[in-house]
Length: 147
Image 1 (cartoon, rainbow, N blue to C red):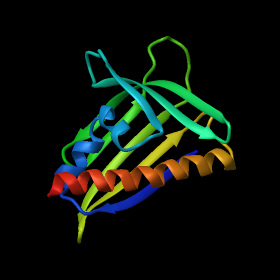
Image 2 (cartoon, one colour):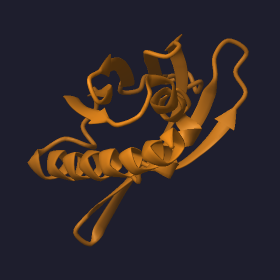
Image 3 (cartoon, rainbow, N blue to C red):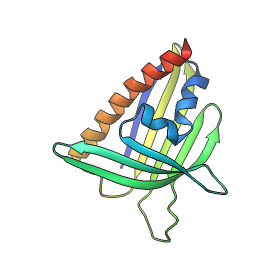
Image 4 (cartoon, rainbow, N blue to C red):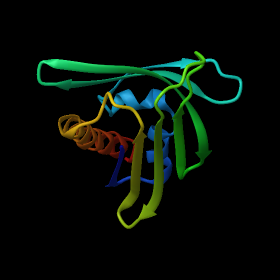
């Protein structure tokens, strides 16, 4: 499954990049990212991430170890699942790409997921709702910083 969403934020690219270059900033604006803890990794910035989504009365959650594999200031940050337990895991890749546009910064986020826990039309809608609310929350945060 691949989801790509794009939004324009009324803020300079450097301000927007501060919110997408580190996973520990995501809980401020993306409620799907429920909890993030930094972990030691000699080669990359790494985090334990808990994703949580509500589907009616049911909550689904997933813990992932993610590392930042690409960091190009101020345009690109890529995070990939990198478990260290020796088992095979479904891939998760989150890519944030930023471009200066008239009126601010275009943020394009792409999530690639290769597993089965988060599939189906219902969960697709839940993810879309989280992304929509996250874009609004991020817009408010960057507007405060841009002043």
